[in-house]
Image (tube, rainbow, N blue to C red):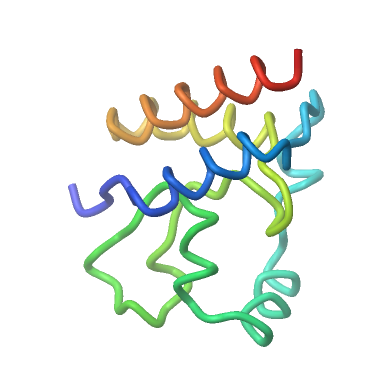
Length: 116
């Protein structure tokens, strides 16, 4: 499988949760997931490695400067979203990316603990 866990993103998400930069939302991730226009606007102001930090998966068959390299988003470029982690966990499980599934679950538990 070409998609692997983006450990930098995992560490970044943990630090965001620790800082309280979370949304304990219960909506549908599609309502909060940044669209292509938001992604492009973010990339106009930030480097691709900052963009990568918001994605738990990395497809190393894609070039490093291609936003398509980064999979399993979990936040809105400001906060970690509960529904984003749930979506990442579910999709990773469905697609057999168990390391990403486990990481998303770990982050989800940390977020819920912080929110409590």
